[in-house]
Image 1: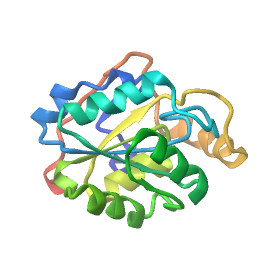
Image 2: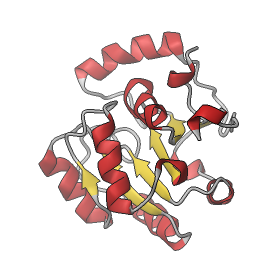
Image 3: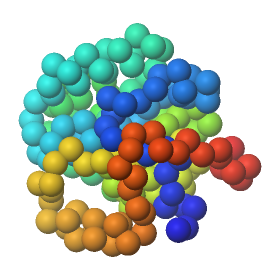
Length: 176
């Protein structure tokens, strides 16, 4: 598998994130995808569990920003609900949305992680900037029709482990 498509860490969901592991790696900012990472596809409201998770992240000293390819209204409303900034129409894997999020969080690539459910948007985009990349399983099967097509290719490229936290790989020197 091409390294640019390989996440640094696989998790079942954002709820399996180990705050201590991220802190030891010097991570201060978390760029998080919206659909099928934080909530099911096009779900308009954050669950109590998610609101608590985000509050816990902030309590642990992490800054958060939602970065999504979705439209402005959806992303901005959801980000408002959970009290974090949001970057809509990010055109991931392009770098612009990730850079905008880091500017909003006042972080650098070396202290920022990206969490998402898609290899060709979240992981590729994060790796292009040298971010620490975390791939989670999608929350549900319901997705935008083009995402379903891309997932078929993704499954040929990346074998998602069934266990949580399967690998926390060291970053190659050129990613630092």
